[in-house]
Length: 456
Ligand SMILES: [Zn+2]
Image 1: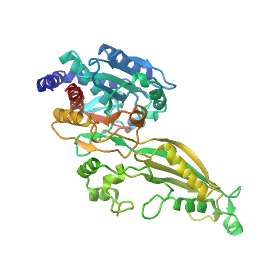
Image 2: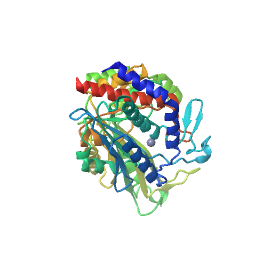
Image 3: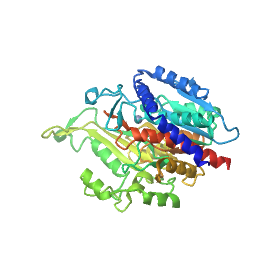
Image 4: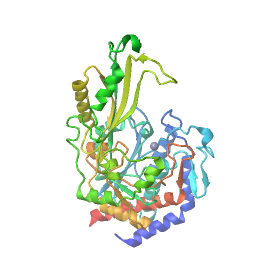
């Protein structure tokens, strides 16, 4: 790859810095709240118009909910195709009174741009699109083929992306997926993320008599549904931290050599975490390293256990119903169907009278660290930022990236541009202006290194 070509793009970004910031401000001024629809159509149209100006032959693709924005530009026939994914919807801005300046009147304070969507995700995909614009302005064409896919329902759980991806595989014919969302590391270091954990949520419902009863008159006669759930839950995880549902770990993939090395390099101060949270110790098993817990192991969390009386003083009641809400974070290569099936079989076996209610889930997703695309992406980040990114095997949380890795079969990478304290989903969401500018350069550099890697 020609360093001179990349320097020209960086210089172009610097020369246009103010106009790029002004255009982002104009974009953030437009609400696009998927939860209730405000501004969604206008922002989708705005994106289609801009993508068309960039020669991406864009259009709105209907879904049963808000439409997808899809565009494609083929400058390297037979060459590498990168699918850039982002989302143009934002979270509702409430509570409005907690914002220092109104959420849709972008304001700059101390080098940060404050507005709903500044970091999540408008500021980040805007940077990616400006990277395309900068590459085209400097070189007249893109270093690889690109498909741009912008979703309008990420903030309401992406209900229609699995179906959309399944039905439009032919239009999403790419070699890899590149996403810029979420924050960089708290240390300020850039991250190159290879995976996310999956999740399933379920409810356990136990019933006793048809009404609450007096614990003196009926205790020892009528069964207590809270005890039923306590006994059942205690068969699902032991005090050593092992999940004891049969076959639960069967499909869990142990970390590869590269993943082990990457995990060991992630900065963490466990003592500080414990101090922050006022924890005497981490969860069992105690000897497990911090990032192994978050990235390599599944969890079973009781989110809530409800029933009977919880008010002041005492009440000698024998409750008639009890409910437990739980979630399980999944790791590669567990699946939602597999784990739902195993938990349900466990409930049938240990407490057949308890109702098991599935409440939805998302498969995990992981791209191997030795993917051939990882190195050019890493080098692009270093070229733009002057610093080695942290390699993150998986994120603890869950995103529907499996639609790219599993439905499309593509290696998928997340390179966040936003500051760690972007306050996404919260009042006073913000993006550091320098990170926005660096995001444009990073986006351009990654595409140039990817294009050059394939051309070689
Ligand atoms: Zn979000």
